[in-house]
Image (cartoon, rainbow, N blue to C red; front, side, top):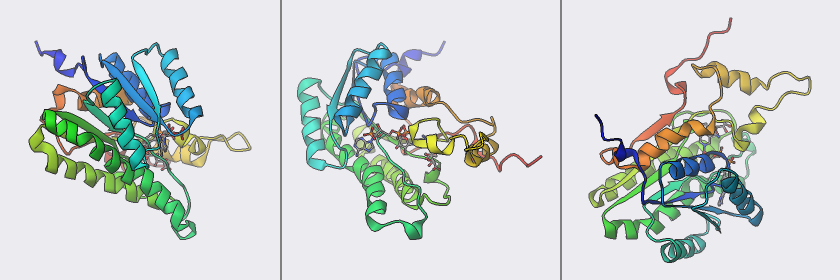
Length: 269
Ligand code: NAP
Ligand code: GCO
C-alpha cells in the first residue's frame, strides 16, 4: 500500500503571492486542506487584502495571514519575508502566483505597459524567490512553484508581453532548479490551461446579442474536454509539487491544461 503521507503538507508554512482570489486562492485552499500549518498571502491593496481574508474565512480556513505587499517592490518583499520569519516561522513553500495580463496588439502597446507585465509576471518571481532562498539554503530544504501558462509554450495575438514573461518564467524555473538543486530545493512550474477566473472573465463574456464570446467557443474547441477549467482543478497538481512526493521532480513545468498542448483542436462540424 503506497504511503500517501508523502502528499501531506503537515507542519509546512506556505506563502502564495497575490492569493486573495482566483488561482492563488484555490492553491492556498488546497494547501490548507493538505494540512499546511500556516498559509500566508499578500495583496497590493487594502481592498484586495480584505477580500482575501473574507474568502479564506468563508472557506473555513483560519490558519491564514494576509499582508499588504506589491511583489514588484523588492524592499517591501524583503520586509515581508522578514516579518513572516518573525511572526510565522520558516517559509517551506513559495508559490509565485501574482500576475497580470494586458491584451493589446504589440505595435500599439506602450513601453510602460509592456514593462508592467514583465515586472509583475517575471521580475517579481525573481524578487520573491531571491528573498526566500537564503533561509531555504540554510535549512537545505524548500519548494518554489512558479505559475506559468500556456503562453510559456505558445503565442497568440495581443499577449506579447505576457508570453515573453511566462516564457521567461519557464526558464527562470529551470535555472533556479539548476542553481539550487544541490540545497535540496525543488523549483517547478505549474502551467494552467484556460481557467475561469477574473483574469479570463473578459474572454468569456456574453456578446451584446447574448451569444457566446468567440474566444470562449475557440478555447472550448482547443480543449479536448470542450470546457474551461475550474481553479479548483489545480489543487492536486499544486499539492503534489509542494509536497515530499515531488522531491525528485525539479525544473519541470506541470501543465494542467486539460490537454490543450496535445490537441490540434476540434474540427469544425
Ligand atoms: P487574477 O484573477 O487576475 O488574480 C491575480 C492576482 O494577482 C490578484 O489577486 C492580484 O491582486 C494579484 N496581483 C497582481 N499584481 C500584483 C502585484 N504587483 N502584487 C501583488 N499581487 C498582485 O488571475 P488568475 O487567473 O487567478 O491568475 C493567477 C496566476 O495564474 C497569474 O500569474 C496568471 O498569469 C496565471 N495563469 C492564469 C490562467 C487563467 O486562465 N486564469 C492560466 C494560466 C496562468 P489585485 O486584486 O490587487 O489585482
Ligand atoms: C489569454 C488568457 C491566457 C490565460 C493563460 C493561459 O488572454 O490568452 O488570459 O493567457 O490567462 O495564461 O494559460
